[in-house]
Image (cartoon, rainbow, N blue to C red):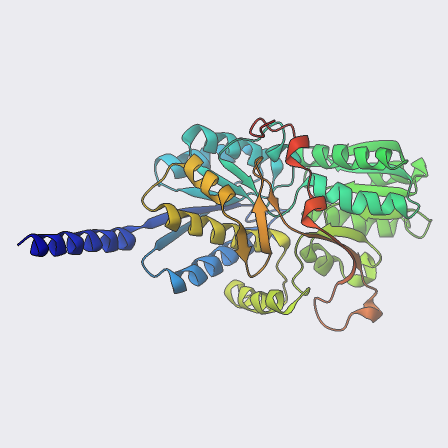
Length: 403
């Protein structure tokens, strides 16, 4: 009788465990710029990347149900905060990912901390997210302003670009990129001759470019992104800035920007990215799937899109390991304690400050004559190891870092 009871107890426990596995449901919100200047670097492409991550995870975890929702933050921190509150409180979203706008990301990071939910930053760049404004509910994934500054900025100074003028998007991201790059320039013996800040999503850069031109700086540093970067580079070509001897440093340039500009205009640009679609066979294979999911054969995914895929993959692994409905801080702690490993970024770690660490790459945009196929944009000039690509946690100013 005791044996029978024991077997019955085991069977009940196994059934309960199986039922729990079947009942494990997760809801993820992809918040992005769906219709404005950052729509190509994030937007619908981030939703497509999220769908691929969920589909791939389901192959080995059929008992986990993952629901995706998406929304447009309109590049407004108040809109992003309202949407985050609604998702967490009403729609029972467990985790928010993406947000290519540092002002919005900083606001949503605070909401996630207040609600004890999780925020994975794939789209925003401000290094403050794992610096003075870090929290235990936010993980910064794909790239940040420190990485960009220490990649492109350092390389430009070491190759003779020792005087700089900054053309800066006038909000949190631009300010952080200008600050981090300026520190690198001066640390390596360069000088900042001037700076000018432009409104987000502006169409006319003429007055700003004239100031850059008259400064006689060897390098015009573009501390902007997306549509602003595209427009400033196009108009700089019209003003003959590069022909006049100055160099343009795209401090945040994506494959989608180069695709929009064309190699004739973008050739020679130096830039730093943490992922490039044409870097290896695994990236190329994933890009084909992304293009099919996105229904966009002529478009190419960015490191933001790759970060959405990678971040969701690691998050879901942590959720399965924990089971049930753990609180946000428990999930971030599990994610930090578990080495990262996925098909796009390979092996990596998440440090105490919440910074995901992986290699970064210094690229130079090819001449049209050097490109062998559509999307063949870059020469690889240097690989920056993960240990050097991002700021050390001990130097971050993040309150989570011990000692």
